[in-house]
Length: 364
Image 1 (cartoon, rainbow, N blue to C red):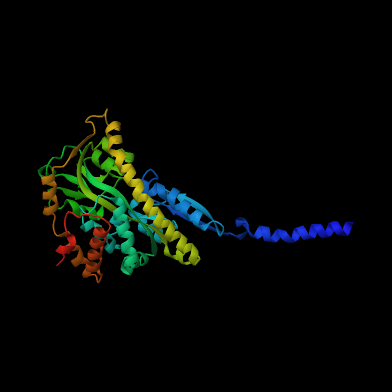
Image 2 (cartoon, rainbow, N blue to C red):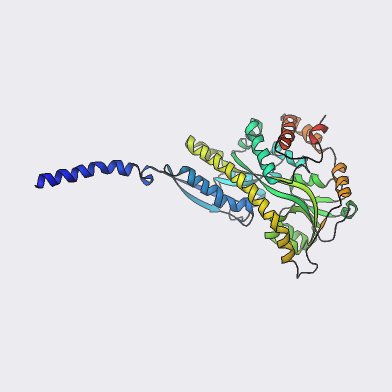
C-alpha cells in the first residue's frame, strides 16, 4: 500500500516541472531600465513615457522579460538644455530628447524648423518624422553618432502667439521680443520681432522680468505652466504643429540588450508616438477654454483672437527662403539635406497635409 501511494506521489511530481515551465515568473529574464526627462509629467510628451511607453514595454515583453523601471522626471537629474547629452552619457537609459536645442548635433532633425505653416495636425507631423527616420539611414545615423538610438518621434500641438499686449497685425510685432526655442526663431524672421531663446520652463519668469514680451508656443504647455497669467493675449496664427524630438535610448545600453527586446523598445516607442499625437490633439481641443476659465479673474483677463488671414499670409510670404538656407548649410556639411527636405515635404502631402508654402520648390 505504501509503495502504491508513493508511486502516485512521484507520478504527480513528474508533472510539476511542465506546469512551472509554463509560468512566466520562472521563464523571465530580469532587467532594469531608467526612464527620464527634464520636464514634468504634466506635459503630455513626458506623461505618456510613464504610462503608454512603459506599459507597452511591459505588455510586449510579458512572459520573457521582467523589467524593473526607475523613473526620473521634472529635472530631477538633468535640465532641458542637457537632454541629448544626458541620455548619451547614460544618466538615464531612455529619455526625452529636445531636438530644437540640438541643431548642431542633430542638424537633419531640424528640417521642420525651416518649414513652418505645413500642418496643424500633430499626428501628421509625427507620422512624417517617423517615416522619415525609417526611410533615411542618415536620419537615424545622426542620433547614433551622439551615442543614442531613435525610438519614436514626439511633438507639440499647433504653435500660436502668447503676449502681454494684443497682436492684431504684423505691425504689432515690431520691436517685440518673443521667446522661441532654438531653430523656432526662424519662424518669426522678417516679422519685426526678435527671437529670444527660451522654453516652457523659463517663459513665466522671462515674462515677469521683462526678458520677453511674449512667446511662440503651444496651448498644452502654456496651460499647465500657467504662463497665461503673465502672457494673457492669445493670437491664433496657426504656425503649425511642432516636432519636439524623440524618445531615445543610450546606444551602449541598447546594444547590450537582446535583439527581440530592442525590437520591443522600438515598437513601444512607435506606439507611444502614435498615442501622443492623439492625446495632444485632445488636450489642445480643451486647453483654450481652460485658460479662459482659469484666467477670468486676473487682470487683464485671458483673451483669444484670430490673426487676420491677410496678415497671416503676409507673415507666410514674408519669411526668408528658409528651406534653401537649410539645404545649403547642411549640404556644406556633407549631409543629404536636399533629399531629406524633398522627402519631408512629399511625406507631408502624402499624409494629408496642405502646406501653405511649397518649401521644397524653393530649394533650387
